[in-house]
Image 1 (cartoon, rainbow, N blue to C red):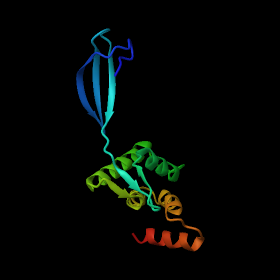
Image 2 (cartoon, helix red, strand yellow; image 1 turned 135 degrees about the vertical axis):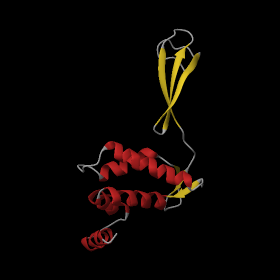
Image 3 (cartoon, helix red, strand yellow; image 1 turned 90 degrees about the vertical axis):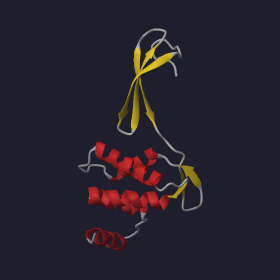
Image 4 (cartoon, one colour; image 1 turned 45 degrees about the horizontal axis):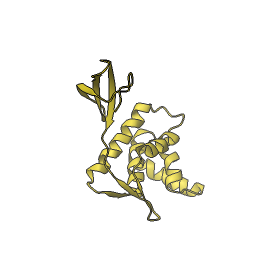
Length: 147
């Protein structure tokens, strides 16, 4: 890592703190003496097994994007959406498996959205569950109302 001020690679960590899910480190360059902050995000290699058998690395941004699209113009804060993604990540890593079916991730998203916002749930479910007609949509709304 290079100092953003002078470009040298020699620096010291002077403070370390947790910043949500990240680790915040204050550093001081040994060459110019300037301080700068870095953030480290801990990640594990988790593969998502798609319904067609393909495997791809877990992408938290992809999950967040799907939730954001379902939540457009809903009274849900960005912090709440980020918190949902963190909870989903924690649940996936708690499974202790290197590979997770995409259906597990989709169901976790549905569970969280059902508790947060029913309209966002229906929006996400209409795509995720491949709802094609009003009867299927009505059945999903009835199921949601019965929770």
